[in-house]
Length: 245
Image 1: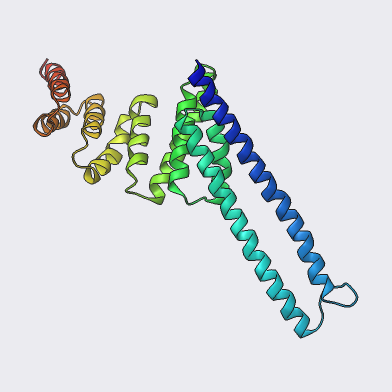
Image 2: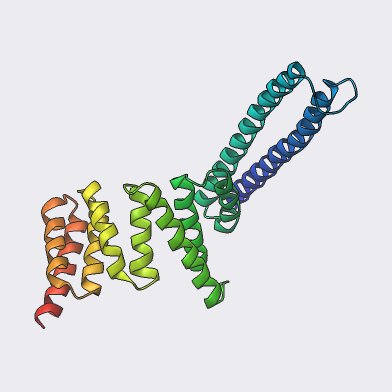
């Protein structure tokens, strides 16, 4: 109990610090913009926008330096949101993680890891008993979209390929759609028995029994783990029984 309270306290502290840092960034940005406008106006004797070529050059140089600072601040803010979302997801605090990751993706829309973590968080939230069926379906759609975005950015991103396949097989009841993603996953991770089990399940659910049996044989021949081998043998026998009646 004390350990859980300690972890919860650490998370709260982290959230407060992160919010404080991001708040400071926002205040600094506003102040910096106001300061920049004042400095540019000051280049003119009448406090108006610069008119001479020399003053305009000075204003451009000043603005470019400030713009670089704003870019760096924005980039760092996005990194903080990503770190926060990742740590919250690790703690299975998926609601808070999703909020942080949705902020992070505004800064880094092409970051496949952020989209993958959104997929994990949305899919995990959808399975919570606190959501009505229509809310759960919306979250599952968000999870699917996030995984698809991740694999579109990086077609060899194994975690996203596997996560999307689990979603199709076990949550959405669309195992046929998982097959091409799992085949791509196993083309990259050739000895991954969990991926083989999942692909075999997808084949079994779509009544492609021969492909399922081949995968179980592949696991049996590959693994050194006795429990894994025994599970593959049991699953193979179940498929054979149904296949041959």
